[in-house]
View (cartoon, rainbow, N blue to C red):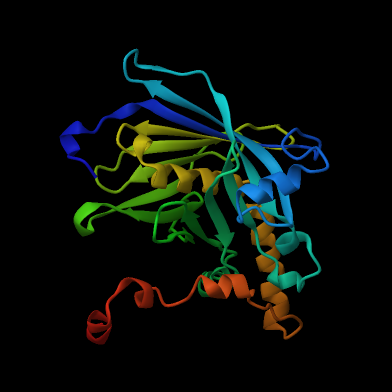
Length: 284
C-alpha cells in the first residue's frame, strides 16, 4: 500500500451497487442468442449461467471532489446448477460471478461447503466460509465468518496482500439498529471504518451498495471486488446458514452426508507447487 500520509478516510470515494433482480425478465439475458454471445466473450460464463443482477458504479472526481453519476458497468451471474440442480441437497453451494458490461470476467465468490461445516461444528453455530478469485490477482481471498463473544453482531474477516510482503487485515461486522442487512468494514491498522455495505430494505430482489471511504482502497480493485462479491451473498447467507444447520443435525444422526464438489476440491490444490521453485519447496 502507498504511504499512510497520502491516505484519507472520510468521504465516499467510490460506490459499487449490486442490484439483484426480482424477476428473470431483464435486458442482459433476453434474446435467443444472448447466452451464446456472453459465452463467446468469456469461458467463465458457463452454460448454467443465470444473470441475477446488474452493477452500477460512481467514482469521486478528483478535480471537483464530487461523485460522478452512477452508471451501469456490469452484471452479476449465478451458477444455477450448483445451487438448484439435482445434487445431494447437503452439497449444494453458492457460486456467483461478476462481469463487466462488455462480458469480461471480473471476480468469483464460491461457498466453501466443507470448511463451513467444519466451522459450524467447531462453534456449534451455523457458520459460512467463502473464497474469492479476482481477475489479474494470483492468490485467493478467504472470507470467513467468525464467532465473537457477548452481544457482538455478525462478523467476517479477510485480508489482502500489499507490496514487499505486507498485508492488510479487515473485519466486516454487522451494524446495529439498522433496517436490512448493513455492514461496516473496519481496517485493523487505525481501526477506521474504510467501507460500508448497505442493503435497500424492502427491495424484492435486493440492492447491496458498497461505499468505499478510503482514498487508497477506492483505487484497489482487489479490495473493491472482494466487497462487491461479499455484498452479493448477503441476500443468500441466511438460507445457507439454515441449510448447514439443518444438515449438521442430520449428519450427526447418520441420516445425511455431504459430498465435496470437485470444483471446490480444486480450490484446495497445493499452491506452493505453482509459486515456489523446487529448491524452495524442499525448505518449507
